[in-house]
Image (cartoon, rainbow, N blue to C red; front, side):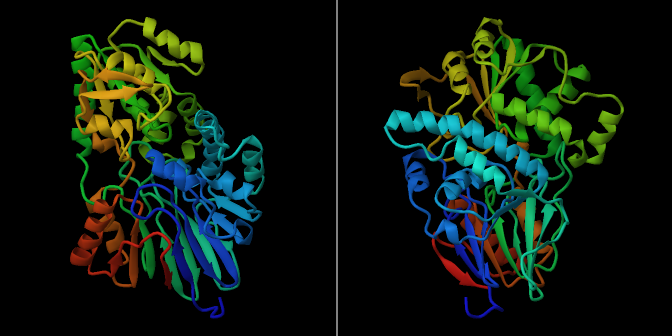
Length: 455
């Protein structure tokens, strides 16, 4: 760009949908990406992932990563495969979880590619080359991109290591929220406050609705467990391996140790979630003070009677031999693959069993169909009757709800020149846009894919 005083922002993903985060910031002779995530949800998303990037990957100098969910990291090895040789910055926990997640997703992508007779998006060598480019940066540690352009990570409180990225350029502040945490969260610290932002790119997953209160959330979890146990069924929880699973283990740990629910077998049936839980156990410095105090008092928050980690395939198969009642937490979170679909195939026809949905379900996913009340679904080519109770518990979402997003933006209301609302379904994003205009009085828009703006 000729005018070094200007920044240019282009939206190459994350618009009109929750997934595919990919934002290009240009200025000071630098080309900077924020996130490079997978598009998720149906064949359209798969086609989007296979397309060449709308920019030359070799021309990108720096890639900043907000957090380690696949819709923010899932195409990084593809970027590297197609020529990116710059530096990748994230927090240490994000770097660690990213490597685990990319290796895990590589297997899923390879199976899908083989089934369709196409080349996989990337392979193990691409992941290895990706991690070789990575540098971890602590929260609040300044990154000097040029004399006039600096960046810093702030705690987003969404998942372990998640970050808000603040860019400072000639006295202006451009903020990328990534995904913002549903604070106060059971495990993590609260989302850090951001003030004096001039431009903001904000998520909108729950831009049009609010969550249950914390007390209601915990009570509904307890009710679901007790009800299923009393009926002699299986409680299935599709696992979001990063954050949601660890929060559920912590909550169930408290219920068991507090004598508030009967002791029944609990299976964590997700190799990815098991690996990520070990990262959480090693990074208690990221937890909030209350949880740190519990751990200091001797409580192993991810361990309680009858909890079993079933990492290996045969262990997963053997869960069927354990009689009900039992609790099974298994991947994937949207029931679009992984071990949960085997458990759903077995237990969804059982009216005594329960499917507990604890996170966002993308349009087109099996989880979304179940939340929307489908009475029959296709699982691995077989029609399965849905007689089990399906409960949608949004209070365990790791995302801020509509009111929380409004409050976050309001802290910069006096300085904001424009707010770009992204990472939400169109209905959710447009609802948040209108609320920000009406309640905060800021210039908010929902950008379109490929649209550019001068800041």
